[in-house]
Image (cartoon, rainbow, N blue to C red; front, side):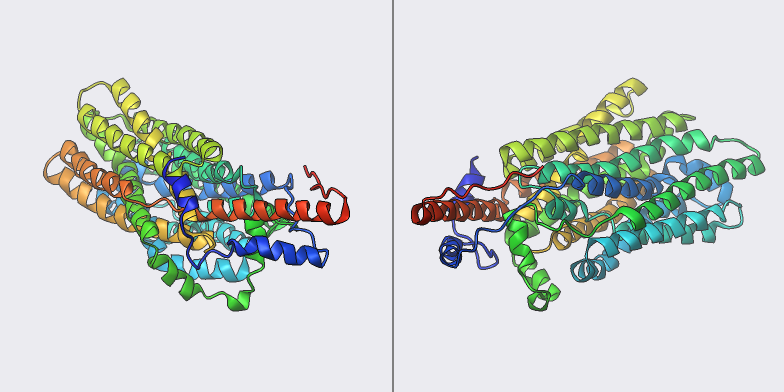
Length: 486
């Protein structure tokens, strides 16, 4: 496994609670007839991740529902394009100051409280937007979008946490990719549905009716998901799925310091490099998604619906990329190599997209945009899972939160700068601007040291368990076989 296997054989710092002492601890426990920690995989884990994926979908759909029909909302509310761009960028802006208190709340209150708050805020935001479908109520629609953007803070960093809490060590990356899958599918629907539900008609009353229908549908779905979370969503399984999770549960809340955890993460050089590179990559994706309508309309006037379909192609291809990358990571554990390869291909895809956008053939744009999406959005679960490996046993919500915070910062910067470059020059110059930063991110990724701490923890726990079974067999003449769970 290259760098990963070398890292596992290297030294492990003081933050890792599993060490060679785990083997000695297993011997001590067995002297007192205590078997190694039991693990169990529950079927309901799939319900948890799919429910999360569903309400993540509902929230992320609203991120792009204004931007993909930018010109229509500009005319309806009588505002400029920059004001509509902020309807997407508000998702990025609210995330930056709120992620730290939300990460603290996750560590103190757990997944269920976070899920309830997320779906409640999202539901409230959708109903506020229902009331805003009038040309003179742009401030009201901003308020509704703001509520949904706050809900996003309680959603975006959760896939890796849910995967770790509910899933086994050989399926955490796949589970994380399913969690990210919902977010991506929501963006895909956000690209596809608004241009269909809200056609570019001249009559403002008819336009208001179309917008109101779109908002009502969203509110109905958000309300249903909120009720479902209240009834179904569970904090964690009774028995942990992995030895690493069992060890994490043994850390008492009193001994945990959120501030100390943040400081440890900031001293982790490999993680900080990943935070920068993740922000550069995902920030580029945010900029491309937000400005896609403007890019397409400039070269292909009147093609609002196809602009949405191109956005859909980007995200659907990315969803396929995410699932493939997740499955590949679970099989190979080659986090560093896979992350670097996907990052490099994101750069190549962005360069090809930039130089083919103005050729005058929409089918070419569909192909190049799909290629870009496969790698650029396929990178999302890679970043989450690589971060968890580099920072174990720190909270997955904290590490994911810092990654997403970086993405929001770069997303705002890139969206504003690329928009200004497009206004002053052209779309090619704006896209080349993003290519330059993806090139920088590729070089930085190559220097990230692969230190797979979670994998090492699970390996040492399994070694301790194997030693324990051997010890019992030698001293009692009885084979202690682990039970099998479905």
